[in-house]
Image (cartoon, rainbow, N blue to C red; front, side):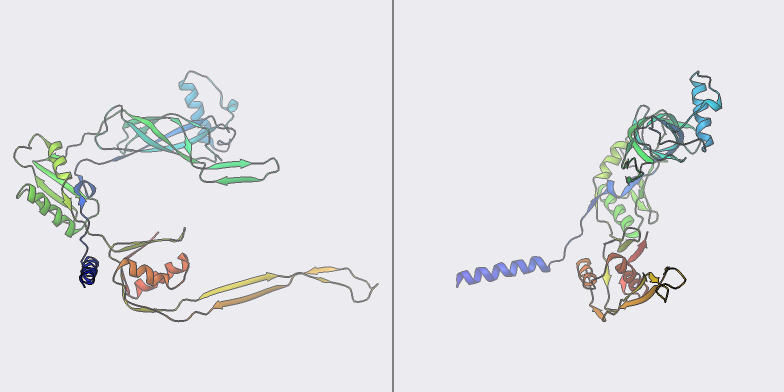
Length: 370
């Protein structure tokens, strides 16, 4: 009898754990906001990639030949235009992201992409390239060997195999910062916290969390900005103030969103996605075209005429008939996945059903089609 009581108590405890509402996971403030005035800046430059094995730009790309001629003249080599032969050089665009608080000498990654008709940049080296910002000032200089994410194999008979992209690559720490961007995160005694995903609820929670640490210091201006007055003792310590705020825990709001990538057939659902009761009928229409050539012979065994091959086409439409599927209410993301999986559709077919469900106001989520 005592063992039965213990078993019943254990089952009751497990049932309470299952039935208890789950608390939302809190995130650190550093994962939700950025300090106003501290931002990345885009850099771009034009350069040359050399050392290619005959896969670079050809003579039909005039700016590559002009760039090679200009580079050689800067290096003290006098060359006439008709003497330049390419295919081992490619003109490229170089891009990079200059992080906030980057100092002189800091190394950053760069991305290199061909702008001519080069077949591959494999084995190439980027010649020293100046990277400029939107103000046309030089902020970094890039140079180094490229790392590509593809392969290209060719046979003597003309057969080839290509996988990945061979006309774009990266150089890890390939650029050196030459000019610093001044970032002042405190202006007028106020620190701005800019939300990465704006929302009124999250902004209000951030202000409440900051006020618990520094009473009366924070106020939410709108759904994207929270202003924090510098508390006493931190007037000349903005770094210490931001470090203290970054460790605050705030419960974010997960937006109900379904992302559909029609190119790859990928569907990702997250957040509080819900599904109301609905009836779904989905059918496929397949068109089949067959070519069946036939030989036409002369009627008489030794009559005039010759054998001819005639083309005969057969076109047939096949429509798959599917029954009506009733989808029950799905209050959680797991229930939504179970309900949609019961349809037995491919990802591309499911994308069309999701769009129809959203149009019928049955799917309670934002639909993003890429």
